[in-house]
Image (cartoon, rainbow, N blue to C red; front, side):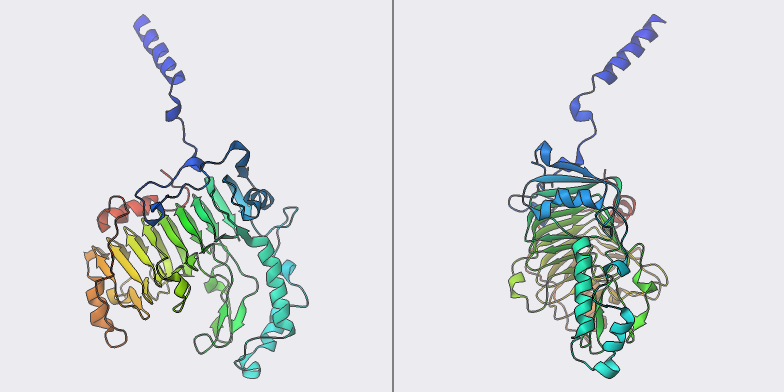
Length: 428
């Protein structure tokens, strides 16, 4: 009996003497590994890990988050989001809907009457209702656009949700966004663009995350979706879908050195755009992005669409449910250089390998190790064979070979790991 008592006492003493390094880590102090994609290039990405105690915040509502962001200042800071924060709230924390933002006589019915193409024609909207729409949109933007400055880390604690917000990393450097469920960056006031696509289209304003002129950014274990207001539930006006959401994560305007890892992008039309436009000369030599171990689920297109950038796309998982709308996954656009390897695709029977890639003025795509519904396929060869009548053939030479990356698993192994581990709330 004495021996047993001694053993129990020794075990208890051991529990009391657990070294500090064995305690749960502070995820706000995490930094990007030295080889983890383009964001590790040069000085690497450390976010707000050097923040002093006075600039470490735990926030539970929009007002607290706005104060912590400090207008997008460059002061090193760590912001921890706990629970659910709704960006569409007033200063007292009361929810705001679209009617609360509308001003100067704006009304959707009035707007539709004013700019009906049958009477208005193909000119850009102008006049009282467009001015009222702009004023109303500005009121919503004041609430939901949240600027993220340099040397900032934003992390979720447990299951942290940010609804209705557009996190904008504008001309900032060294930013980390992790473990966040970002939902429904809903635009109350889309604008009608008569000439887009020949028939006109509705243009929305907000991405869940927008990197514009940003450098050294690590986006990890986020979930981004339209949850709450799916676009397919919206009506059509002027024979075009009345879209309420823009991108889930757009990387534009000469942004550079970005790693997006272990994240889930779901239930959305245009998920991710890399590059501002076909004539955006400032993007040349930039837009270097790594995407690995991400899941694109029920995404119609842009997963991603790339202009100009050197993009390393490896160990990602694509899931297209039966009955889902689908156009393509990989968009090969002007001067893009996508190096894709060991990605897994799951699609229903009516989607073929040739549907996975779409080219707009693209010239090259490197691909290897691709698995389609459990079978190895050559995306490049099949694209060229099936689309040669409508698109130029792509070459395999993208002009670069990735060197900044960790272990690259086979598509089969990555497929299982991503299904288990990608998205918010799944940090190891």
